[in-house]
Length: 596
Image 1 (cartoon, one colour):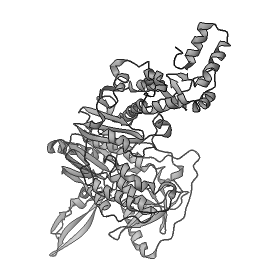
Image 2: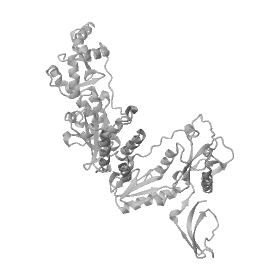
Image 3: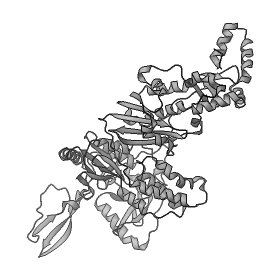
Image 4: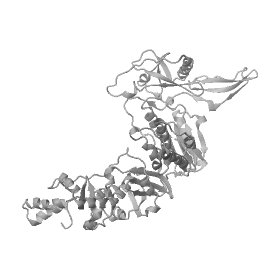
């Protein structure tokens, strides 16, 4: 059977809605007879159930997989007739077929629909899914989807009807999908929702189908198409539909959004080249009552983070709410939480539109750091494209100010690598010394800390021009101070190994804690303030100083506390290398004012 459709049929003066089934045949038959006077086919209701003719999916088992059989679960008596109807429908469409024997079987789960029908799902969690090889094919990110339609003003979204069920399974994969029901066991002939690898399998396939159509990207069963004009959009839509037709893939016309300037996609709104939060999600937040339990608070925070992911500084306003969840303390909602909640509601209805990234336009990256965190803003046409921010770790908080500002640059460029790699961009910082240290034309710096040297090397992979701008003019300045809690993603930007010295590093660390000069020096490095007379000799080399594991370094040389300097000289002298070679040994490993 190729499919079926519903038609209005006039017979003896009455109009009936009759289902028709379409099958292949070498002979031609006329649908119309003397008893059927008129027939009006409603193609929008057509439901083709034939699988794609080009691709078959294979389910790969792990080497030591063992078949597992779980018998059918009992279901409410009220659902039995409707379940039988759903199974008969799947049988008629060739999506499933009965089996008399199977080593594999997974129980079904029934979910009632709003229209009274049942959604039939299969629970593979304990049977098939743990024994499938992982499929790591990536799903497009929001940034990838939106950048595909950059510069577009008109959009179409095509919805593939029962997408998984349009993909035939290989013969040796079908027995793995058997479901156990009160009416017997059935195996799927098509890919089925609930199988762990189904998402990646289908995404790989549909991406290949439309991969060379400009301005089109598939996110599983939704295909987003964009055009700068209505004509361009229709041309691209025709190309996509032609590819789908070649593969026998069918579209659910009722759910498509055709040739519109404003469409809903993946929970956001594309509106004439801008990206906005979905008003329905914002409205749901506006109408949400004050949470009374921890579970309700978690739901609130999840909704806020999704709806406000493109809004800068959101985590600052969320902090009173997230604080309630730390350590699972007793739930206590007071005026501080209520004020934050109301502020978030009002903030989400303000102008929070982002420009859609366009690879053809110039791009700039603003970076800034505070004592709490890092912030960055990707900008095109003087409008934000992406806000990013990160909380500093305890170790990073001990960096000098110049190192924190440098870290903001290196972290932001790596975080935005997909936008910046392969193109020239403007890098903007409010720390003027970094324009010389990281300036591409200045050459690799030699008289700075080892950490800054390593970061300068990492930036050599990018093509950029670095500029200085006062912090008051930078959007990223607030982000570094009102930052989010990004901690899950780790970027290896460079590492430093403490040098081997004739005095143990642990001894240097212990003595440094009790040395007033070193204590003041560490504070000066953190604050970039070397005005204290007791550490003035260090001011001339301030850009070369860093702190690693509570030890102060000048480039890769350890700065010794006063209590260890004489011991270092005596130990070096005991090698009997002569005066010049003894000095060279000391200078290679240590530094303090006057040593050079």
